Length: 113
Length: 111
Image (cartoon, rainbow over all chains, first blue to last red; front, side, top):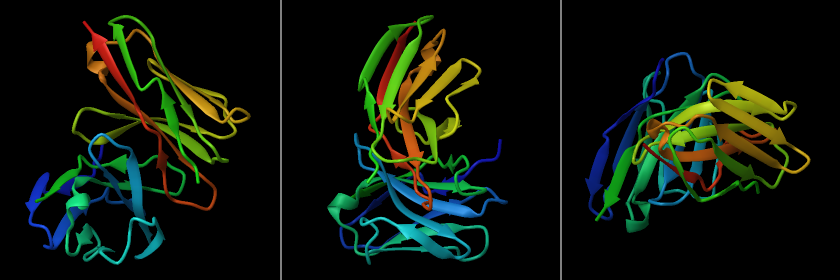
């Protein structure tokens, strides 16, 4: 089965630094998402992306965050000036249509120290 | 906003037994999906049930949906040790792309 690929699998960063989390969605998918899961907590929606623009974002997704699809295959999440509370597992997902099954990557564990 | 709550929070059973997990939500939905997560790993899609469906089967999985009670259940029959994982329900609504995840049920299947 096709899969969503995320890199790196684990990233440790100093507080205040910028990080870029990378994702390669499934090639014919049109909808892309970022979610995060703080250890032991729920999976939370961050942002959805369709037709080269953000289609929906949560209140978590503030000016500190941005997303980009730089080259038609990669989908990135940038976190500027990381905070300790940004430590979480970040999941990328893609689907071929709204309301269809979403395929998730294995996640990037971000640790801010 | 929608919020999924699952119960039980944790479930321990012996191999061969059935496992039933329940999910409740608060607002109208378009679809409800169940995902599985092995410890520290990604989310694996198990099954999707639409709001106009009442029951769906996939292998050893059976999902029911009761929109009048805003609840769903996931039944895993003849469980195996490899079924040990956390199971989450996730709902989406009309005119929204996002999935709202439940709190999850941690299932432990003992050999």
